[in-house]
Structures are given as structure tokens and as C-alpha cells.
Length: 334
Image (cartoon, rainbow, N blue to C red; front, top):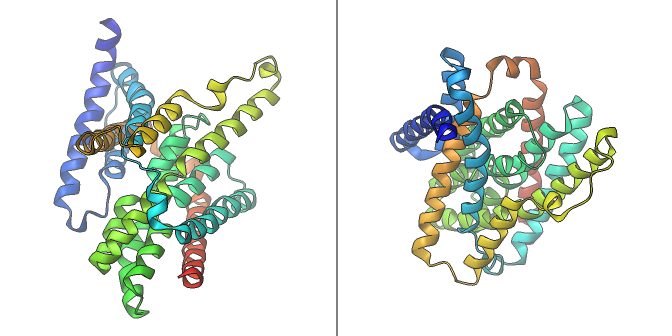
């Protein structure tokens, strides 16, 4: 009870910010700014104006770590591996090239700009897969700093804002088909809400295709998190004080990702009813908003200034590369 009392103020504050963010999202036209991103920015602003660490820290820490992991677990219940069969091999070909571009280009740009590997790869994951959700899923397994998490999400979000406006215009100017536009937007715009906003602005048919493609792309979270979990564990073993640590399945395959995969599997074989799956997805989205509000509350604006402009340039160049590669590959495979 004492532990709960200590966590309550920070948890309630993060939840209150989440509610405000959801309300703002429903009011804003177009719904192209997701409530999770809004919550993070509100949290950052609140931290800059008023924050009492001794009162709020425990609850904010709980929300940013535990609530985040629970949100990722519930997200699995809304994923269905069988959708890969529905969108076909062409989608997988496009996704293969965009994933290679994002992570390969991210590695080179990270080295060029001398950005720490955690931030660089979170930007790459956000660009390659699904923006904030991928970054949030990857952050716990590599023990990323909250400031880097905020920076990575901010970087990919700013690019998305421009793409939501530009994509429909470019699509109309180039007289793209609904199918071409749906594949292109679904494989190259970062955040799910931005994909939906841009593609449905072009046409309803393009929006439906893009949504299906984006769901397939989201499944890449599973192998990405497992790979980076193994990479980070190997790096820890190289440290002098970690040499005696034994390899364990739990360290290579974090428990919350195991639960995420389990729920995705149960949903794929139809053991989770559609109504329950939908409810779990909604719960996952709101818990993610709470978690990102907490991450915002833990982020000091001065950290952004210390990090500098290079990660933003990194994200813009990388996202632009993915846009171009996606367009080229879609033109070839369709």
C-alpha cells in the first residue's frame, strides 16, 4: 500500500496528461498528430514549467517502464500474422528494401554524425517500422535513456507532419493509382496515424491498402526487438563487470516481447475474439499514451539542447531515403 501511495501522484499526472492528449487529438482536424506524441510533448512542457521529483518520480518511473511494457503486450493482441498472406509477397519485397535502407543507412549516418548507437538505431527503428511504437518497444531492451527516446520520437514525428501534407499532393501530381499510393505510403510514412491520415486523404481505397500494408510492417517489431536484445546483451558481456553473467533466454528474449508474440499468435489462430482484440488494442493505445506522457515528464528540455541538431538531420535524411527507395521498389514490383 505504501508503494502504491508513492506511485499514485506521478501515475495520475501521466494519466491526466494522456486524457488531455486524447481529447486534443479528437478536436484537431485530420487526426494526423497521434495522442501519444501529443502526450509526450505536453509532458515535456509540464516538466519545464513545474515538476516535484520527490512527489512524482516513482509514479512517472512506473508509467514509463511498467505501463509501457504492458501496452506493448496488449498491442500483440491486435496483430495477425495471416495478413502477410493477404497483402502478398510484393509488400514483403518492398518492406525488405525499406528495412535494409533504414537500418543500413541509419548505421552509416550514425557513424557519420557520431550519434550514440542507441539513439541512432531507435531513429532507424521508428523510420523502418512504425514510429513511436517501434521506438517504445525497442527502448527497454537496450536500456535507452528517456531523453533519447523522446528525441527519437520527436525526430520521426516532425518528418511525418510534413509527409501527411505532401504525400496526397505528390500522389495527385504524379497521377498515382490507389494501389501504388497505398503501398508507397504504407511502407514509407513512419507513424500509423500519419499513414492513415495521408492515405485516406488521397482516397478511401488507398487508405484501406495502406492500413493493411502498415499492419504487416508493424510485425517487424518482433524480429527487430529480439535482434537488438541479443546485440545489447553481447555488448554488456564485453564490459569487465559483466563477464561472469550467464546467457539466458530471458535476457535474449525479454518477457514482455514473449507475451507480445504469444498474444499475436493467439490472435492469428482466432483464439482471441474480434471484440476482445479490438478492446485490447484500444487499451494498448491508451496505455502507450500514458507511458509516453511519463517519458515526456522525465525529459529535460536541456537534454535536447545538449544532444544537438545532428539526430534531427539524421532522421530527416534517413526518412527521405526510405521514401525514395519505397517509391522506386513499388514502381518495380507493381
